[in-house]
Length: 446
Image 1 (cartoon, rainbow, N blue to C red):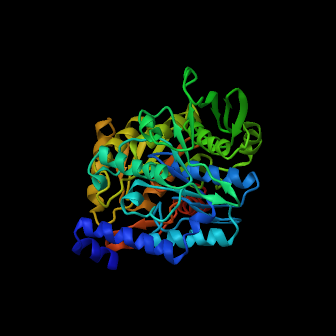
Image 2 (image 1 turned 45 degrees about the vertical axis):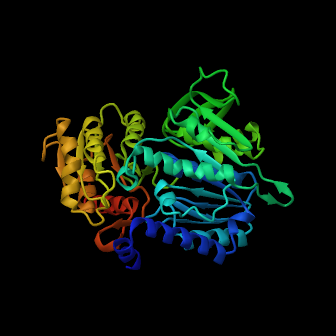
Image 3 (image 1 turned 180 degrees about the vertical axis):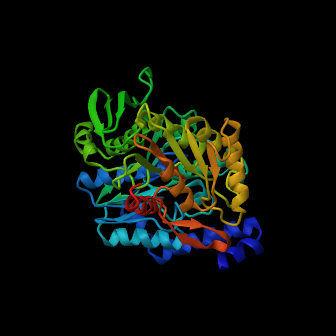
């Protein structure tokens, strides 16, 4: 309530100062816990959450107690739980409190998924980062930032601050300031253009030669229902994650291990022991004769990447039935018909539903997404439907599915709530709802 009131009454510069001051006070109150651990920040447009989760798992498997703050998961040592806050980055006090819990638990590392909106609100202030991972960059949150250039500049602030920061000393060891970047992004050079102690790059471009320092190169990427097989600098790797696009996330995580003096040989042994991130290409099996996949993808690039895998997973004689919506709160309205178009082009049947309307009219958001579906030739009430109730929409998709079909449900992944007007959060989990609806159908023999 207070937060919404302050947003309304304070001018933007004053609100920014308030956020900055609150972040510093929070760090001071919890005695700057990030100074006691090696802190790895992960930022970019797509892949942040999966990459963060992989890094935390790999460090843990390598023998280091690790903490994690991400869109999907919070972790403090052995304790791990789903993010139920509807925020990639927690508020300033909550973030510092979580970091202090990591210190108390004896964590050597903290992995922090760091969003542009979090940076815009100074949620990273008071966090002493040692390493930053840049995954990629494409248009997102443009309304909040006032355009793509501002969005990019916001993320670059994090790297500028790393270059300015003093080296941390832990246990008598000087911790190198490190940048890890996806060299296949057209924006990589900008994120590497800072003076730090160590730079590591990675790429899927096998023809990339003469680049210094030599990047980690993945080659011979093979994707199947069993996961990914690929080579990094000639060494064989296997990951249980599905989808070609996850090769980048695996590469980034392996690059982090290399930055911490863990060999490629050791990384290759550890990677098969990792597990997929909840709500990311998660296959739901509840006894149904068709495949159900729940995924977080809500912006065009992520959805296009997702379909590369979905089209491979679908049996030749099966249909794809896609349930999707659009995010409210003024978030990137222009992308709504675009994601609708991606669904309309790739899926056989599409159901447009409510997602997270916040204070916007849910029907208007649905209509904007449906516009893109319609433009790809889908006919309302024949090959696509608008169903505002998300549970009803999921039930409709499941009831349409036959053996060998694939039901794809996107936009929320493992999120634990639907955000509606006046800041209210309604308890929700797509994965749980799918299982509940399948159970009802099974009782009626499908």
